[in-house]
Length: 501
Ligand code: NAD
View (cartoon, rainbow, N blue to C red):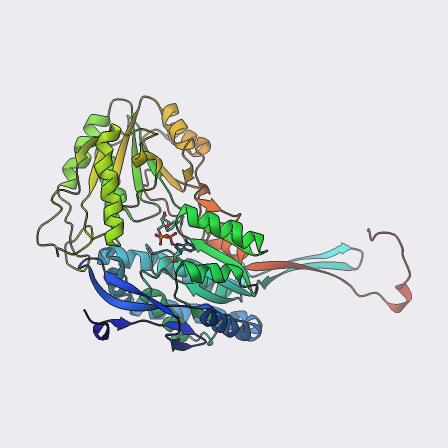
């Protein structure tokens, strides 16, 4: 394909489209393997221009009334809702996930817009009258300033909405750096924000790769960084940004275990394992990647899962009836299939090999790999120890509940986990014992609703605050405490002691 037939993508800076940058990166449709677009990668001057725009817009934006900000959130909700089909098609064309799933990510992103429409509640401070005689104390929430949001490929709309919506609601101005693999949804959202009434310069989309991220970390005018991506990069972002004195939250990778107790409804558990293991081709940070079969149910559970897998339709996500689309790139396909190729040699049993026959009539160049099921997996195997981030589900067999808990608590990732059981006491013990940030009881993908906050523990999150919801308003605001007193002139005196009651 010649470059003239490619969609030319751009940055969105100060309300204007710009193609500045010294390099470009290809954008593919993963279902066809064909390059569909070309995105400019910001150079140092482009990032400077974007930060200038954000800095210029900041004073007016932080002075904008809360009612007007809330109104923009209501407008944004209306625009996204009315045109969600358009956005879902963009997500599917660049990411590959099936259209229903793309629509689901829009719904979950909208939850944060809805939460932010109530920003008057989230931005309210606290007042204590008569803290001392004639003294009142008020805590205010003020924006941090210019903030950067760096997002991964796997949720092209939802993760940007997790971050930028709250940052903007709280009065900050934003540099959004989406994944260079899926830039179009972020650009679509920036236009939607503008249509909703957001002034130019408040939200700027700067496309780029590693180099742009490193420039963001070096830019002293950027005061806070929100990141979602893989663990090694999250750790790098956290340490570098914190050393530069920035506020930082960096969410990393995952290995999510689903425990199936002997008393569980095995059909429901198998349905959940297939949905949560292979939905979005396993490219979700909350995907189930390990099923922990407790007691003597493993053979029956593996049979139920594998029989369901036979019914999955792997196809272009834009086609009706597709259950699972391609993975993001040819490199990702090779990496995932490399894990599957090595699994038997490590001692796992390959029950279903996704490399073999994953559908007919698929475009030859598409980045497809079918669902894989591995049994008898154990810690120490690469397929267990590393995040595969693809449609590969491993079964670990344990004898007891205690072994299941120990397995999970020894894992360095701790994003999400779930237990399937009919025993309320086991479920209660699990939620108490397990060292993981988000827990499901008979819920395989326990992504908290917008009124809570999202985040894992251990190597799945670096920093103190979780994302979206109430914690997000803490991240994007600085608290300022005002102590005031209005004495009569006759009450004034010199007091050299430390102020007390
Ligand atoms: P990634 O870490 O490769 O990229 C994330 C972002 O970092 C992108 O914007 C990318 O341009 C940038 N980046 C890439 N390499 C970099 C480098 N060396 N230095 C600086 N910046 C760099 O992640 P991805 O492949 O886009 O997304 C998948 C990963 O994200 C998985 O590990 C998944 O578990 C994780 N994820 C986590 C969550 C969560 O909430 N914990 C949510 C979604 C995805």
